[in-house]
Length: 309
Ligand SMILES: Nc1ncnc2c1ncn2[C@@H]1O[C@H](COP(=O)(O)OP(=O)(O)OP(=O)(O)O)[C@@H](O)[C@H]1O
Ligand code: NI
Image (tube, rainbow, N blue to C red; front, side):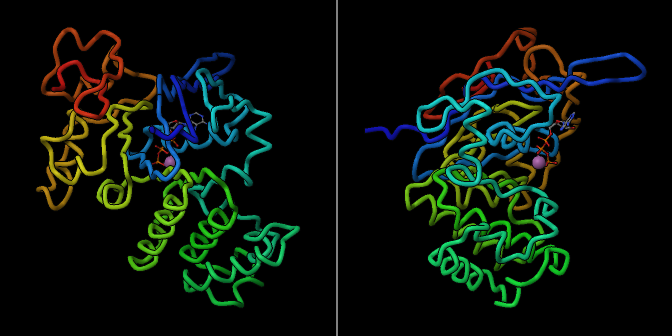
């Protein structure tokens, strides 16, 4: 039987209400019609270039978007609607975030306490010690304040916090920058273990190469929406297995596949093209691409392109 998703995001849009010059106001739609689900036991990687909306999706699920952001669509956790109140209740216990910036560490709290929580139990302390060992963090680090850590150490502390939280859903927003290869691989191994224990892991990364070695499925983001949802092995098999021209272009841009850059730029939220958001850069563009393009199923995956086969 198919497992029910732990996290389900349906038709999510996020709009910022902006104050421009003087009294002028405008709405900036930064995520549009985004759908995604993550099942127990799964790592779903979210890959996409800078500004494609990866962190905002994480913040929308956690309920930590800025005040001027408006959300539409549906987010459910274990089948229940996640409204703002529910997000606040589940945050840090059932749903854990490894934030993209190490600035999220509390500067005034010793590192050990941040990882175990204020009212820490003995077993939490034990798991904190175990995870610090795996991450080569010396015992005296527990008594340090964040400013005394290097960037890489702070990153490992953030990952540790999410790992020992007992959350069923872990969202890791770029957890590896600043880590050397050994520590990056250790972090990924830990995420794999969490998934294998039945948790759901969302792994946000620029690095599709890293993503497809560890994830089960990959969501490719472009300009605030998903353009493709594919099994990780499709990326391993090669370009022909992929469905969207942007995913194929990402694949070709990998060093081992010739480093071919994609001409053009991802459009800024204020100047999105009509219909397919990738169309200005797409070699297959036709008049029909100006219509709204829904996701559709092709060969066990999903794609937002009318020309994909
Ligand atoms: N508070 C905000 N107000 C207005 N626009 C914002 C705000 N926060 C983010 N954005 C815009 O939303 C878009 C998506 O941002 P997001 O941080 O989700 O990108 P990302 O995919 O995580 O990028 P990166 O890989 O660089 O972390 C960007 O164009 C960004 O400029
Ligand atoms: Ni981000």
